Image (cartoon, rainbow, N blue to C red; front, top):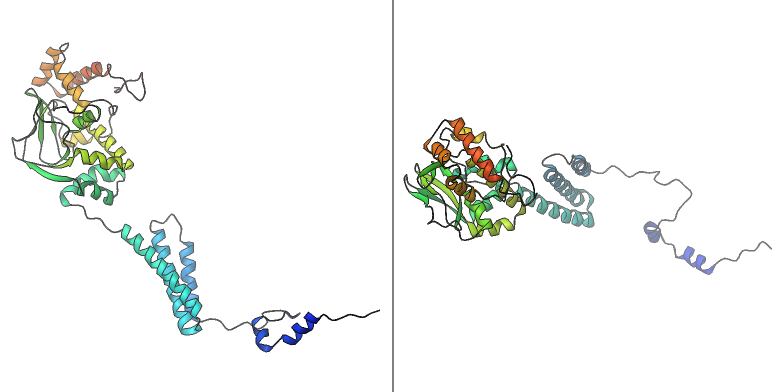
Length: 346
């Protein structure tokens, strides 16, 4: 029997279809859909999408990639808001794109704030460009380093920065900004200190191993001097919270100690020649320059040779004698990080 019973639900559904419901839930038909395309949207709509497309194809290798991306997205969202308000009259589209616009503006503002030019004091620019900028320390980090717990101090010619056996090494760490200082031990000249060099880097390294020590050398201003001075305790605390900057200081202080070793009692080494020593060999970071200074001038085994170059000889022979003595002394110091090796190899 070819009898098909109609379903009550199907009848109710068929009867319940109204033109309004059909507009909301159109009934699928066998005809091909989208035969009659709607008219093209306003030009503002297309310009907004062009901005989105440009923002998405910007290469990530570009320096200002995120700033350009957020800026183009913000412009695109703003054009969407204009299109939805003036030409589409779609409240939901306008609200959503207003939210996206606000998010992108906030993110763009943050990125621009991070990229703002950081003003460095005129006196500190030479230190930043000479010591910190080549090591990729950001201006903002350098300003934090020099802006909170340090000050610029002055010394007139002949005044002492430190006196041997009297001045404590635990109080400060300084970099010379202007002028020249002279370092001596028991009246014997050792070396000069020039601008952009640490004044007491050997003592700073010594303090990390032995607290409560005194300067074993006398440091006197040979000209009118200005120097940047940190509180050692606060500087140490700050560096512990900035591991990157802590490693930078270890490198700079180690290099400064090396330069001082090369320039011991060699008055021919001026500032230009000191710069050439920047890439020379460095000491093991655990070696105390304070002990080195003491050992050099108090060695009884080579007392006669020591007094000869302390009185001044030719620059080449003087330097060779110093390095010879250093070699003997350094043989007694083993590197704590790599036992069995020499801290200083020639």
